[in-house]
Structures are given as C-alpha cells and as structure tokens.
Amino acid sequence: MNLIIDVGNTLVKLAVFETNYLIFRQECVKEDFLITFQEVSKNYKLIKKAIVSAVGNFSEIEISEVKKNYPVFELTHKAQIPFKNKYATPNTLGVDRIALVASAAIQFPKKNVLIIDVGSCITYDFLNSENEYLGGAISPGIDLRYQSLHHYTDKLPYLKPKLLKKVLGNTTEKSIHIGVLQGVISEINGSITNYLEEFKELTIILTGGGAHYLVDSLKNDIFANSNFLLEGLNYLLEINTNKY
Image (cartoon, rainbow, N blue to C red):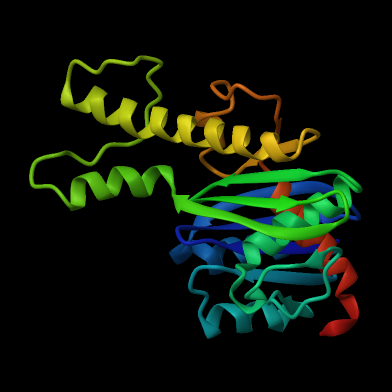
C-alpha cells in the first residue's frame, strides 16, 4: 500500500492506494494533520511507502513524523516523470501541476489533454499527443475571488460560494455570487474554446475542490475526476521508488 500526502494551501489530503486503486481518502486542516496521519497509519498497517507533495507549508515536525513510519519520497521538479517537460522554467513548476500532468500522461497516452484544476488557484495544464507538457495558465480560484472582493472593498461581504444560474443579481449577495461563479464558468468555457481552435481533438479533465460548482455548467464534454491529482502522485511514487 502507498500513502499519498497532498499539502495544499488550505487543506491536507491523505489517501491510501493498493496498487492503482484508491481505497481511502480524507482531508483535514493543517492543524489536525498529525492526529489524522496517526489514525490512517493505525488503520492501514500494510502501508509500505509514502509520497509528500507540498504546495503549502509543511513543517519539519510533520515531515519527520511521516519519515519515522515510512520511507518518504518528497516530490520536487527533479523527480522522474512520465512526460517530456517543455516548461521554460521547470524549477518553478508547482508539484501539484507535475502530478496532474503525470496523471494525464499515464491515463490518456497519445492524446491532447487539458487539465483544469479548480483549487486555491485555477490552473490550466496542457499535454499534447506527443507526450509533451507545453504549459498552461494560472488564475485566481473561486474562494480567492470572494476573498478579494471583501478584502479590497469597504462594504462588500465575504461569502461562501453559491451557484446561481442567473444573469441578473437583484441583491448585493446575489450579484457577487453571479459575478464570481458565472465569471469562472465563462473563463473556463472561453479557455477551452481557445484550445479547441488549435487542437481539435482534446480530452478535458476537470478536478479540484471547486469543480463540483462548475461541472454541470460547462458547455464542453469533460471528464470530472476529483482524485486525478492523487492518482498522479501515486504513479509518481511508483516510478520514483528507488530515489529515496
């Protein structure tokens, strides 16, 4: 069994894979990581190795605790990967994006793949049919847009996301919800249209914690997979087994 630890900007996701099958997944706030980790280790005694992918802060105390229990592979841009990285600054490429593209390379070989990850940021990553990663785009995530409206104005409230399938908001709260979420939907639909103009055959993957707000509102055929990044991390752990 493999233990996957994905440290985001807000939450930590822990997953257990048996070969290529996800058998457990849980997320927690960072303050609860050590307790959650101990519970997972206790419940899944056949775990043999772990991977840590951190885009958010992960303390030495936390990583040391994992290393006490298992051999740990810490994902960086130097990892062995199952695709050709054509990014101009590979040392700045986030480990979350590396894992997403790895997942695409393994699951959709010889296809043009656009991965859209709706998290703290919305990332767009493109892998072509020649197995070349060409880059993509980064824009503010859903919650970040809500936060910015509240933080950079004196009177707008901070709201939790709510999808309203309307064009007109007749209250301030409704106007914010429509502006943020319909704006994101329009952005994603527009980005997909731009890719399709250049790549007629395109497999589109939608993932990330905010994907469920959007999946029924996007115009194009997509594969929604909330575990796509975790699957990529499991693949990377396997091919980098001898590197720790």
